[in-house]
Image (cartoon, rainbow over all chains, first blue to last red; front, side):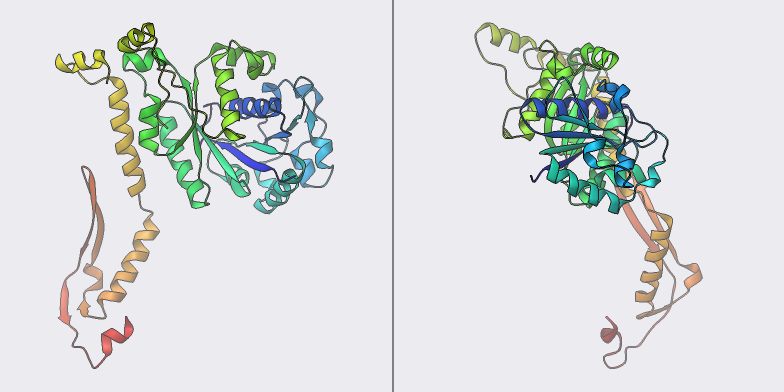
Length: 271
Length: 97
């Protein structure tokens, strides 16, 4: 196999990197791809609890790198979604135990074993970030429509370009009511400021909280708008690059509501 | 632009927090990109002195190099007293360049 390594990063913490990694990974696996999701936040692992696999961890990514186990031994198979594997972070080590050259070796192994490997990058731009982007083929930058998050995203985008990686953006936790009231940056504002390609838009959704409470995959909940947005993002990553990005604001303005009544279709977001 | 925001504009209401956020962000990003490390400025000063001294005798201690930030733009300002111009010998200064 000749898989793709995609790093999920943001600079700022708490914007939804782990949710994006878990959900996009699960969605890609549902589409029939062999997928590994890796927690690169050494010392502060979280992807395992979000995915509901915390009780089954035996080996972790540091064990693989230090040769204490094989890659396949560390990869936990998800029992609900076929072809989805989690390689957890170590909770007792520090980020410095992994060196960039280890990542090159690990990513080459992952490419042979999986169609997609998603790396959940730690917050910040220090060693952990540098390790995660070292051997990545593509990058997803996650941000929320907040000033602090967008500014950090801009910094990270600059660092990715410096490594010749052209990142794509997911704007997470959009609250259409607030955008409409003029109290939240719209996705168009964010794209305008960052001038980067858009991969997807995800609305604020209670189902995300419920999903991480229970450890059940978000993308299997048909009524979740966020879950469906992640499914579409996965399609864009795999085989349908031109699938239009749905505008969460579509159908909200007065004239669009009138238009809808008259049978006009919702417009899709600017890309 | 929605109907709503058009009316807001006509009534001359203060900017929405969304627009304030966007403007602040755009400024912050420009400022962030203009931030220069101290050692970079020192390196630049050394390089500049090297070039200038090929043509002029200058008072190195009186030389100042600064970045001045104004609204919307930034300028690099070099100020140095010249003691004397160097008279070029045949092929002198050019050969260095």
